[in-house]
Length: 351
Image (cartoon, rainbow, N blue to C red; front, side):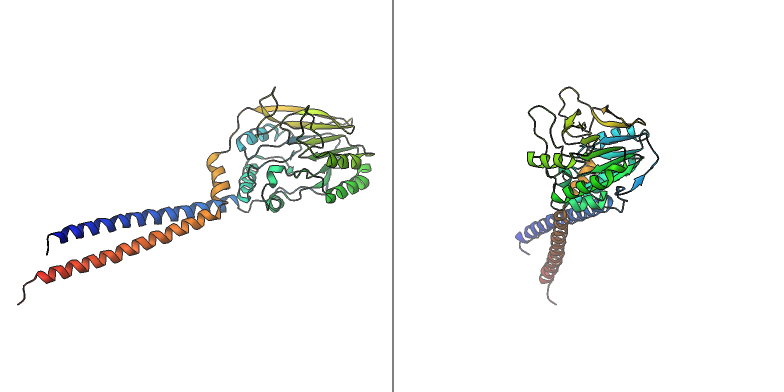
């Protein structure tokens, strides 16, 4: 055997050992990525019951006094949302969210938020979508899966409630017809009428325009004209305000987790709607917390791991590459062992 041969064998052995280590690392990384994405998707897209609204139903028809919590705009900030919900859950007959519960509006994020709501919500709860809830092309389908209809009406006691979807900065023709027919056929049956929407018809702040375009707002005004509407409640503004639109009382809700736009109040909260037996509706802003958060690990799992299928397929690619490297290492090791054996045989004396 030449002196250079042991060095060559040592070099080849070291080289293939490095490939073996790389193969094992890639294989384990790929398996971990596939397991993580699959687990996240299964966890956050489990078969949780949806929060279906009581569309077209009459609830507690004899009630003349009750309380409703209205909140929204927490953008997957579930820590502040939980604090808000805990504050009102045992004090109200039901709760309404006026939208912007999501940040990215991917389906697995919907699953994450719904999971958190199921953990904390103890009173009946329904919702309407906000603009952040419908950011993806298939978001409305996700909304229908987890929250049912995106516009509807129902009654509670002596009050008619109408929920609209203004998340796209429009009052579409379908909803205009719905609102006209609902007011024409249902309004006279009830003492009071309240409309919920995410983007309001007007922005009550001076020189601000986070609201429907003028043409859409005018269509809204024309439809409700001639009907006694007691209150319109909106989200989107992130600042509690109480004024009027087209002669109807309009309330903007405070933020429950998204950026606060109120320069004088840095608290997340909600509004308590107190329906009195004398027919009046008292509205009060309730401050709850200055702290917010997303439970970052769960948020990352739901919005990244649980939604990005390319991560799963990238993991599969790493598994394949790692397997190939390990196969090469085995073949190389076999060839090296065979070559070494042949070299030893060549050094044996002939008999």
